[in-house]
Length: 387
Image 1 (spheres, helix red, strand yellow):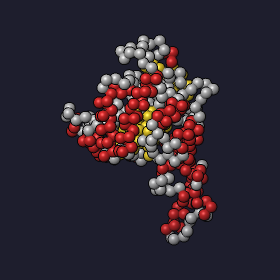
Image 2 (cartoon, helix red, strand yellow; image 1 turned 135 degrees about the horizontal axis):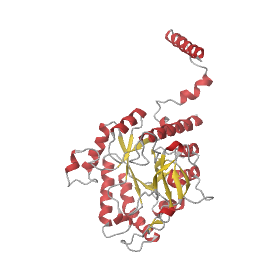
Image 3 (tube, rainbow, N blue to C red; image 1 turned 90 degrees about the vertical axis):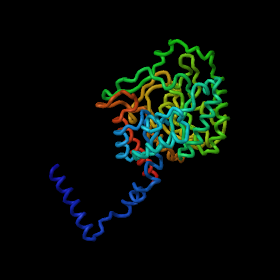
Image 4 (cartoon, rainbow, N blue to C red; image 1 turned 135 degrees about the vertical axis):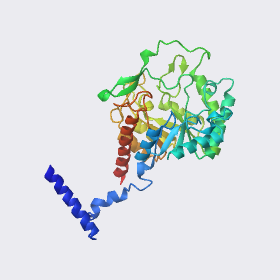
């Protein structure tokens, strides 16, 4: 082994000397054509032309931001909250998060740490009033429209939102042991099916939820078109019929087809959360992820991607490492590339690995590093396969 290593070093030194002396050490054309076509400095080919991002839901985390710069993952996904960004506006109670100066302050705070705010996930002006069609929904919608216009002025064009009122993202375990003792989140319907119904909003129906969504789309999509904004609706997670009496409607690919047909527009689109789509359906009725990406991608409806995977089905599932779930992740990445998706993509819900905190389950820093390496490898593989 030591002799082989010495021989390798000698050959390397010889090639270097020849190069300095002006001797051509280039390999034959047939061996270099792919490497020349795949240049790491080529902006289009890098990350398959997609915009690789990380999520920051608890403010600007200095270590995570530093690691992101070192990995050259320079897109940030998060909310608009001046306190999170450490802005001087944080103490000004009259400043709303949809105000232009609040948005600019947050955007500039990201720029100071070398990152670019790409996607607003969890918009501050969309809540229960709108989703349940309550008395103050028009005020919420007006604030949402103001948010869109001001984001556009600031150069941010994508909003990831959801249609899950009262109960948002839900899991029944946040520390289930997975591969090698890593911790993952999981959902089992038995743990919630006997929980008391939430009755303070009266009797809620799926039909009413669809009606409220249509009302919202008709109000905001025309304004989104004018502002050049992309609205990316996230699936319900978990994708089950209801939780504690609160209906959930974005639970299947068919629901997203209906969403697009409610108001056809380049601004009305999807956050393609792979884990959510993969957990839809039952055993024997699984969602074909690459085919679903192809369908919505050909409709130019995928505005944002959460790249993750699960094991199981809608009533019983757990999150996994990116290389340990049920989806062919290479085929999924190939589908995004083939349909021309070049938008923002981030890893989501990674396992908490040894030495890291499970305080923010699903967003382990070490798990995120593993995810980025895996995703970037898939991206490079897809591009090289087309070379």
